[in-house]
Structures are given as structure tokens and as C-alpha cells.
Amino acid sequence: MILKLWVEGTANLITHMLSVDPKWVHPLPMNVPTLVPKSGGVTVTLIDANHCRILFTILWESNAYILLLKRSRLIIVLF
View (tube, rainbow, N blue to C red):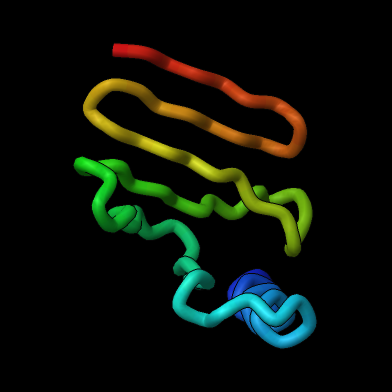
């Protein structure tokens, strides 16, 4: 729950403090693959990092590759 609030809070911070138009900011649910619009089928999933309540891993998936971004490490799998 804390992580969900943090992600939504970050989205609010970006729109209000940095004056970014809200149409460009989309908070994502945790652990749910979300289709990226107009991407040809790319999904992104925020995965709870378990060891810290405010950290998450980002998983990008398509029919051609998988990208896993965890802290400062990037893992790429090509099909």
C-alpha cells in the first residue's frame, strides 16, 4: 500500500512541482502488466522489489524483447 501511494504521489509531484501536463503522466498499478498505447504491443509492469517499500523493478515486454530494469542494472533478452 505504501508503494502504491508513493507511485501516485510521485505522479502528483511531477504534475504540480514540475508543471508537467497531467496527460503525459500515468501512474501505473503494481504487479499488473499495462499495455503502452501506440507501442505495437509493448507492456510495462512495476514489480515490488520486496527489500524496500519504495523501490520497484520495471519490466518491459514485447514480442521481440524483454527489458528488466532493477536499480542500476539493465537485463535485456532478445527473441
